[in-house]
Length: 455
Image (cartoon, rainbow, N blue to C red; front, side, top):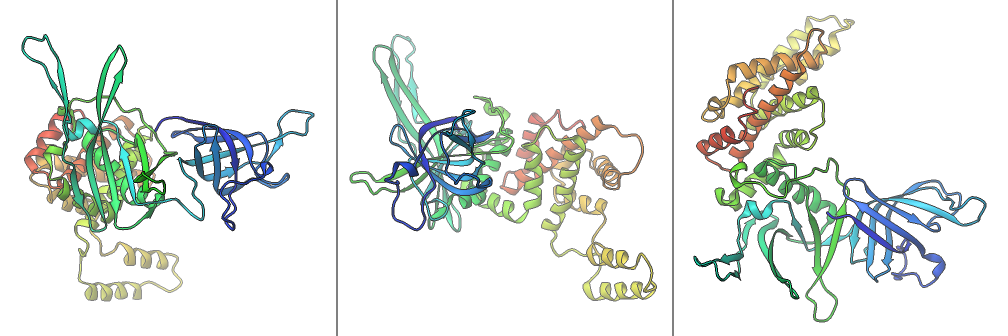
């Protein structure tokens, strides 16, 4: 998402009237908005949106009209306290921190809703390999030609939405300099009914973003986000709103990457089946997804935190794979629990703790057994990549030491290498989740993650 700067007039909309732009100049305040996805935005006002003396507060929505006539909606705003703009004068100013910018539209009475959302990502053209611009160079190299072709979109139908990968063509004639042909790959999300932007973000954009991040081996964020609704203008079918929002851990992604360096491309998968399974996994194995991608997007985290996140992710994945697994059937376990508690005096200081442990994890397998159960589910993949017994043993040992803050020498570098190995293990799980064959997974991880597999 590009940096944004708007100079214009701004106001807090009145939700109780039909007035979109205040007619009175006094209700509009001049100011400059500067926004980037890494830091969010700051709106510097030559005046105030709130009364003098009001404390800083959150404001859901601020409207604006830029100097070029474009309407803008700002969301997730924090209005600071007003102050004097120049010492010794009565001119007051105010600064507003902005979390989201919706360009080319005014929205009030709640969060903006859209019928569709269109998103572009870095490297999506390379990943999809949907070529609409075809160059034709004859053997003599005396002429050059290029053609634009229509490319059929690739779609996946979920229960409540359609996900579509398509290509948009563009051509520009630069007088006296040449002709430019380009294509942009994009993903369009079309739900059954209009959705608020936050629901698009949390239920669709984030999962697609993680799917592509796994495939490309890069912590991606969207390049552009566009909300689409029917247009009220005559002769115009769609109204498009450009959206920018603050993200955490924004990374620099390379402009290009060799296709052999990705874990999988669009041509390697059945897109509809892969997306369906990915969304199912992301929604039902949340701890695995959240903890894994939390490490991918936070490269600067301490190695201890990285290791713990990935170890806990695998531990939690056991509950997803074996939701009904218990060491004993419920009735015999409840009887055993009761018998144990009968042997502990009522006034014992450990009674409540033992009761809590027996209720929560007493009938669960040990950490070693949990990891072993998960690894055994991938016995046609993991033995080709790692020494399973060694990785399990070191994971259990280090997890125990860190979780209980045990004293002793600690090799942070070795722990970091082990964490990277667990990262590859989880990547194997996730690739298997979307239907990739075991041989393909092994080959890709051996070729692209060999520097992580020697931990």
